[in-house]
Length: 175
Image (cartoon, rainbow, N blue to C red; front, side, top):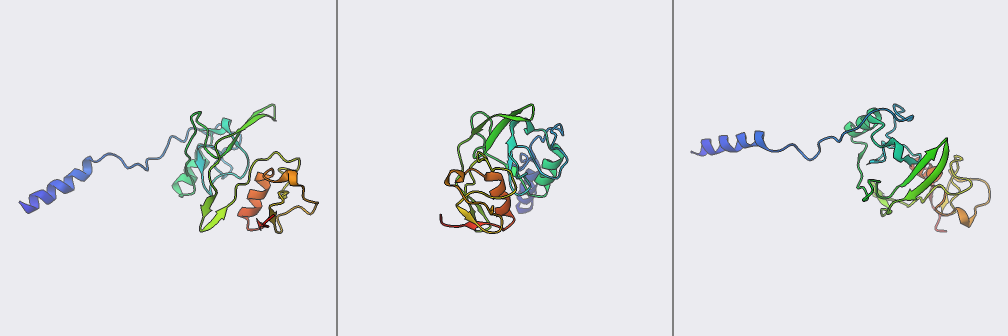
């Protein structure tokens, strides 16, 4: 009888539903940023993501990069707001290579990366955003601009500051 119960229990494993880690539908490679080695789909987050602005047009349009990052454990699905935008991101629409408009979704608290808290980098609304140097006066280090820091650039140079932070070239200055 004991062997019969063990056999029944072992057989039941074959009839359990699929695991919750079933990969999502990655879509296709129709994004202009597809196949560049970085996941650009705003449904995902993690170290396999691009450091550039997330675009709603890249949703389900970078399949190869995102699937590779998923399989390597470098991205996970993000929680989305009621409009399908990832929570804690800046979603921008572009028309004729110009920003048509951006909207911020509800921000997440600072992410914990290996015990070090990653700060809220804000947006890319600074005049000096995307120039390869962090202009946010909250930071210090070799990733900073050499020009005078302006208070108006606080929380306004996200892409540059995030890239320098991830490269270990910034720390919070306490300002």
